[in-house]
Length: 289
Ligand SMILES: [Fe+2]
Image 1 (cartoon, rainbow, N blue to C red):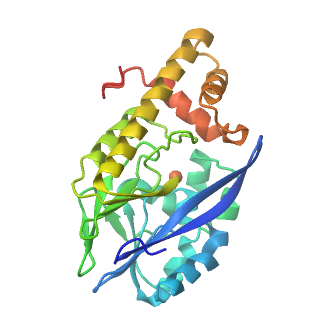
Image 2: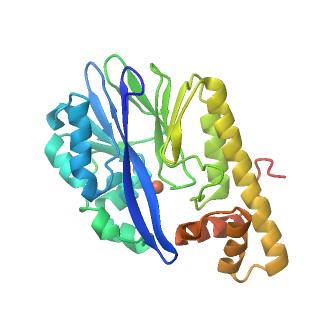
């Protein structure tokens, strides 16, 4: 799907097993074209490699046309096919300093974050050639990509803004009201949402768990809604702790899950981790109350 003159996106769908059934998930892969450099952003899962290559072909690019692969964060649905893609493209891989360890050592990633079907999704460890820090700008010729810190969902996550087209590639940084929230640091998650809301000139917002949003006003509303959703989850968690106590995290999470009307398959370890983060966030300074 062509988003703007330079930015193309493709939804990559997959399923994950949970104790309560199959959970349908997806992640996006982006291509950003420039007169001097084309970038692939994120690398889907290992089984989706053919679809990533088809996507490149649809946009008129060969793997050898890719000048750099940028990674938003190390999770399996964003790095699964990276090993093959790096070889096929023959180009460097760039990621944040905070993502390098888990990309370069997938066994360590699985040990710390044992998501279902991890080794089916991820091909192998990959050397990161270029460590990015927030504020770094990748020049593409007639455009650029600026990296912004976006911790919360993942502490090393970066998102990329293409100012010339006004497109923000926000990856997994924005929780969507009514869907499973996935973050492990509430304050960092809120700070990220405020930071993204302050980026001037965002005319198109691309996010992992929702359709694209267009227009600066709509983008701001999406971010305001996400902030309100995190605050709402915090209030529900505090209520559940008030009635159930803080000893049984799973029971608290169950009550919040029910109050949010989420699907049974969305009662995952990731969701429980999110609620645990709310329980541990004794003081959340960004005016939650
Ligand atoms: Fe993620």
